[in-house]
Image 1: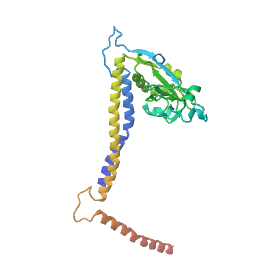
Image 2: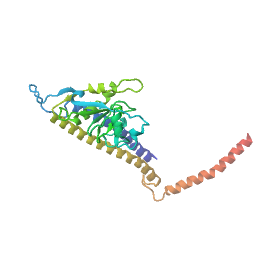
Image 3: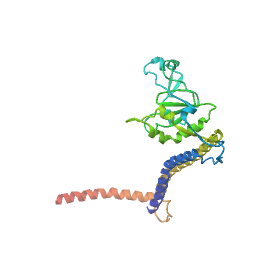
Image 4: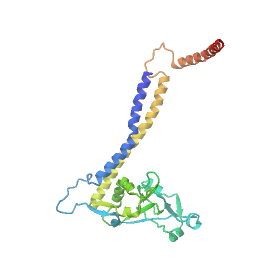
Length: 290
């Protein structure tokens, strides 16, 4: 029994450590993003005289077109029946890239409502949504229309900002964006808040370098997290294996003259069964006496 207690205690301690990994992963990712947009991931020598490598600041509205979508009236058959145009809602931002839609609308819906088809590469920000959805950022992997709960950000091609740099910057501001939301029971972001977001803009070559280093760091972090998840599952199997070995008598050295654990268990069960009638008889006798 002592051997079982010792082993299960060790596995519990390992399990407790592994259970902290998801929280540490999120903290480490946030630390990577904070360092990236301070310039710490790209220690390029800054020229104090020349503006060649200087970081500028620009509002999001100056480097991108920002819009939103709409929900075609439900029950209007011509807007949904045999629709061919992907139409996405705020739940899609839980995926880093939106490659499919749960609903489709028709060209008539595009013509008669405020819906607009946004191109591949458009950034999507959830302006409201339950739980952790509000403030999340994703990217369209398909051309699609959106509902009014999503802001669509189309970074100007050939402009001063790289789309992926803007994507990662907005992700780094997830908590701040959530705090800026206004409203009562369900606070919402709005296009005005997004348009006023100030972005640091290093030279485009440095933006590209920052994106590469963020993605490399996140890949490494996700690999560690996956290894921790696998280890957590192995520990659960280990506990079962310990118990199985214990009842086979394999945890401690066995004396050849000792009876097997299975025989001992059989004896215990027989003894309990034979003692039950005796206990009942004794109970009846005591009852008669009283």
